[in-house]
Length: 287
Image (cartoon, rainbow, N blue to C red; front, top):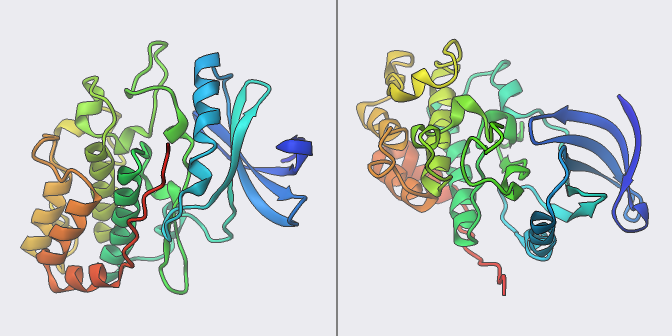
């Protein structure tokens, strides 16, 4: 769908077409007229309150400086006519949700993908950022080398701390929300890990085993062992996935660093892929 809208100082970013739309915002393919490059812009659907607008602008001085090989580059962010917007790098590759419909991943490939994501989450945590919407649709896996990028930071900038807002609006994607979030607990690094664990389960199995369930009920049920669907999955890897998707947030893996450490001890493939992950612990000074 062709659109005619521009964002940024002197209308630097010229929106070309709609790439996608979710509950929080709309994503456009746009042209950065200053650098003559294509970018993606996510614009919030609802107007931001004065307080949130101020926070958004403060974040604008920090978020674009985040640098990690497995996190989408954010070039710019600001508030325009009451709506917040993010300018990010644009990818030609399909997201993981689409890719999973076309191909299967080996155990080593699956672990390599999630290890990169865990590294990204560890980096975000060090900078006091929780993603809140880990799912295949927000992950890009490059076809030729499986380089993985975590996308869509729209919910990072949401002013809501819990999954259901005061107005009844849902934050996040139901099938990937940790059980404690439905009970009113705030988003945390552990809730991001729960979603990452489900992504790993999906990679190992080849499909999302909860897809036929409605919303909340399945969240109280532990995911079936991946080995029931994939005979190549070892008991140790079963146990690792179970740890990451534990319904008890305190018993669950708490963050990306723990995820990588345990993964390296779980199996030969896990140790191999963790060793391939380039350490990136550079902290962004927010002062």
